[in-house]
Length: 230
Image (cartoon, rainbow, N blue to C red):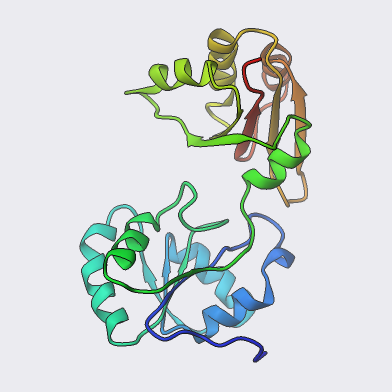
């Protein structure tokens, strides 16, 4: 594959599959083969992906616990012409995953940043929800404690469609809070296991969805789409 040129001294944000390995684009594979280093949120997860696709590039950890102290060294390496590929565990780096601090440092230092198109969970969940997607606000994961109620109160008055991420262990609590703050009739869509074998989207009110997940144990990461205030 030789239909694109790599830019020296650049950071490449490389989306990785959120489920089906066939979603990994040929350009993404080729980019990870060509960069000097790959920075990964979890080297074990990315290592398995690299092994599957025959990628032998040197792999380094880059996550919330080491990114602050590691960034100056990577900026120095980039300024010498080295190239970096950045991966999260799944999806597009920077979307509820580490990468933002590195990107900001690159912008401040005049280092090129290139984001490849590819998988991200909220786009397919939003499109299939049946809830208006011409205008929406992405909130990702809400704070677990401090600031959570304030954020929920603000979202209750949001006229645009709201996009949230949630874990299976907290999905029922989130639906209860949406019902309390937004009222019982707000349309909601819950998508899980996107691009995987057991992909599922359920639509309804908070009460109906709570009943379902009370009877059927929630599994997989969720994208929750909430209709805006009318």
